[in-house]
Amino acid sequence: MKTSRKPSPHAGRGGDGFFLGIECGGTRTVALGATRQAGGQPMLVDRVEHGPCNLRLVTDEELGAHFEAIASRFPRPDGVGVGMAGVRDGADIARVLRILGTVFPGVPAEADHDLESALCAADLELPASRRHRVILLSGTGSCCYGRSAAGRTAKVGGWGHQLGDRGSAYDVVHRALRAAAHHLDHSGTWCRLGQRALRATGLNQPNDLIAWMQAATKTDVAALAPEVFEAALEGDAVARAVLGETAKILAEDAVACIRKLGRNVAGADVVLAGSVVLRQATFAARVGRMVRRAVPRARVVPLARESAWGAVSMAMRATAVAGVGAMGAASKGGASGAPGPNAADAVRVPIPASAGLSPTELRNPASMNLDRLSVERAVGLMLDEEARVADAIRPHARVLAALARRVSAALGNGGRLIYVGAGTSGRLGVLDASECPPTFRSPPEWVQGVIAGGFAALHSAVEGAEDSVMAGAEAMAGRGVTGRDVVVGLAASGRTPFVWGALHEARRRGAYTALVCCNPALGRLSGGPPDVLVRLATGPEVLTGSTRLKAGTATKVVLNILTTLSMVRLGKVAGNLMVDVNASNEKLRDRAVRMLGELTGAGRGEAEAALMASGWRVKEAVSRLGRKRGA
Image (cartoon, rainbow, N blue to C red; front, side):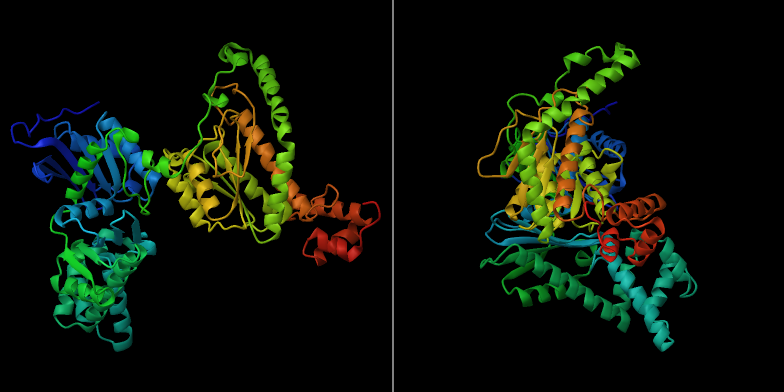
């Protein structure tokens, strides 16, 4: 149910349009309504604060309710911009845009992480230049994010408090309390910093901090940061040492971000954001001096207006590019400095067209009355349809044979076979990869499965995960794909953006690429991936669009062929026996005994003894006993 909107507040103010900027953070959400003035600058109409909202901590329903509550405080905008904590990649951006589309139907929108909105806020304050521009954020968390004059982006940090947030308020307090405890152990003195921490938390003695830290949230810990700064002002050596190290950490991160953006003789603007650097002027000046020492042409300035203004700028930008991508918006960032899942994304990574709808999406004439068939007839129908799978694969036998040879050569030369897919296709890739180590005693690194949405997508749908080409590309970067690897994309329709992002990045890195799909109408790209395109004509499914049926069966058969024949060529099979099986349970040990008997003629007792001496490795046991002729 839609909430009611306030009447338009900008009529007669001389502004051009009404734009809503929303910045969602871990502490609070700030929403700004603004009009665009003659010079292009936004002018505030209304400001609203709401509760915290981190994308990783809310469900779709909760996020929709959050946006609805904000929408009820403003009139219908001409554009919406959202900078949100917890946004990491294109799939996250797609999720936010989709939910925005339900709250603000038909309104151009742009969404990204909150560092992008902070950088956009800095762009409103600083004159346009050919300098790099970097946001150095140090608040509850910490991160550096920058953009070059050419539009290239880079990020340093943003790993969260468990892996990173170095130089953040949380990190300052955590290191300070550890240093205070260490100081107490070695000197027998509870320092001034420790005394302040006890007062601020209402605790009585240092030991009480153990339980407090175990129960405290990230925000609870970060809230003690002012005590560290005050203790340093009072001359506490522990606090001073921690803050000196913190300044060095932040400066080094800013410099690393500048250098990732590339050489620029014009220099760089480093914009300070977040409570640690905005509320501690002396400390911020220290960080600035360290940055300039490493990058003499750098200019270090505080963010003059709250970063939610950057979300307003994003809303204005979304309106300006209306008609491009989802909801008329083109995201400029993405949590890794890459574009989000939009038209701009698709231009960077071309996806082939299909001459008509994929057959997997068409209705099967034989099952039009599936809901009225008897169960017995429905079983027969499904079996008849599944029987078509082998005939659909057979015309591609020579191509699959060549691909199997390519895979075995890669595995034999230090490379890997990496499957990439989404939904059913992705799960099948992960399944086949997971079955290789127990079946062939192959290292887990040899065959890997990558699924859009990660581990969670194995057992439940991850909305929007398959729609980001950049997420696919980042998955290949994360796996360190090289020219020694073979990457096989799995997509029933052949057009899954996540898969194509992975294939293009794998090809860029020199890997051999293949795509297995069930869409004979899929076109080919000139000069790009894949090296091998397998288009299986499995036809419409019994249940329209349910590619876990024939398309899934066909995909599984193809994967069985690739890994089984690759392992045969690598010597992991003798005759038709799995002589490298990992005999990890009673059933497999019994099979190993029987295999060894068949291969060597040894009796059960002799075979068991040889296997035990060989660590239950059949191939080694065969070497001990000698293979009989004809086996």
